[in-house]
Each structure stands twice: as structure tokens, then as C-alpha cells.
Image (cartoon, rainbow, N blue to C red; front, side, top):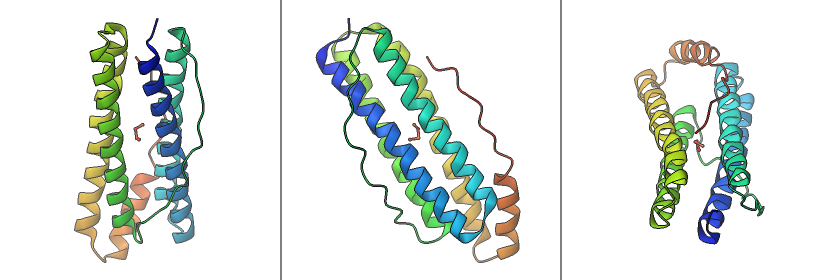
Length: 169
Ligand code: OFO
């Protein structure tokens, strides 16, 4: 059975993933206001991914005989004021989530909980992909600069992103 300490760390991470979903909803709304449907779609898919990440941890905790507990989810604040700065905020957030996943894995490691370490490996790999996706969009936005036509082309591209339910663990 999972230790109390690891159980608490899992519950904290479930909260962080649900906060990520909420933050990306706020960012989706930011792009609704800018009338950029492709960006709206990108954040909609991102939200769904975060929900899947939370539910993956939730199901795993139950499977291990743990108890799920809920805390308040922080208020999401979009500090970015343009597409580039919103994506820079997204990258900073993903880097924070990566550090939390690493800390959760360290806790599982200290417990010598091999099953949990192996389960969390999926999340470690996922974070590499998440950060890479966002970095690529930031690089494109920097190339675009003030070119509105190019921004609309990127918007078209981001409209093609679809949610594929991940197989976690
Ligand atoms: Fe759950 O990966 Fe983003 O936050």
C-alpha cells in the first residue's frame, strides 16, 4: 500500500493538474477575446490533456488503495498580454509542473515504491513533450513578430490540433 506521505504528494499533484486545466481555460478565454479560434482550440485540447493527467493520478491512487482528498484550486491569472507572452507564461507553468512531477517521483523513490516510480515515468516523458510543444510555438511567435498575416497562418495551424485520450502508465 502507498505511504501517507506519497499519498499526500499524489493528492497535491492532482490539484496541480486541475489547476493547469483551469489556467488553460483562462488562456483559452484570452484567445476567445482576441478572436483567434486556432489558439482557442489549442488551449481547449491542452485543458483536456490536463484533465486526463489529473484523472490518471486519481485512478492510480485509488488502484493503490489510497485515499483521494481535495483542496481548493487556485485562481488562474493570465499575466500574458499578447500571444507570445501567454505562451511564455505557459512554458513557465509547464516547467513548474515538471519540477512538481520530479519532486513527486523523488518521494516515491525515497519510499522505494517501485510501482509508483514506474507509473510516474509516463508523466516525466509527457512533461518533456509538453515543454517542447510550447517552446516550438514560442519560437514561431518570435519569428512572426508583428506580422498579422503570419499570425493568422499560425492560428490556422493550431486549429488542427486534436485531443487524443492518452494511455497513462
Ligand atoms: Fe499536466 O502537463 Fe501540463 O501542466
